[in-house]
Image (cartoon, rainbow, N blue to C red; front, side, top):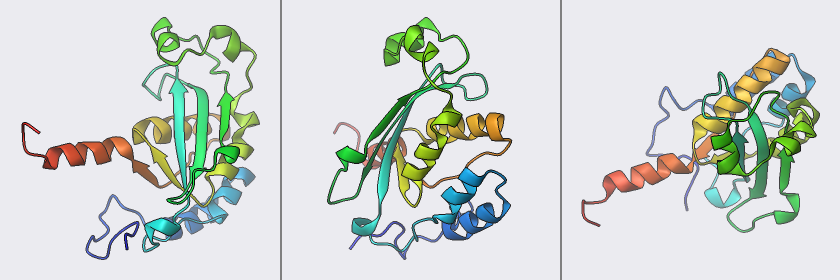
Length: 183
């Protein structure tokens, strides 16, 4: 059986005890939505992978720098190792409140008129946090989803967010580093 963190891998300084951290964050959260999100808890590291609730999360942004760019859309799909929950999938186009570079429009295909009529992140935050609560988030580059959401919440709520992730880009890099050259 496979686990979120096997017994032979010791937690590092980079790997928080998510259950303890979420308890602390819930006690100190100032925003009710963040408090509710943290109170939902985190998956225990010894949970077998076939019992872990996941959610795939993807952002489109105005650029790649969370300090100066903003989220344009959020898509998510809950799943576990037995089932992809398509009926629970969500997608929001958001108003980034800043101009979008032509290059980013070409990449994500979201137009200026679509974002002009779109809501601010705060209007979908409750639904977003409900969909993430109690799940391990799967992303393709953790600094995008973690960094942009943390920065956006700090700008709106004066507090950020923490969440456990599985980074498929990191997994891919690890896999390729182990392969012999020429394969």
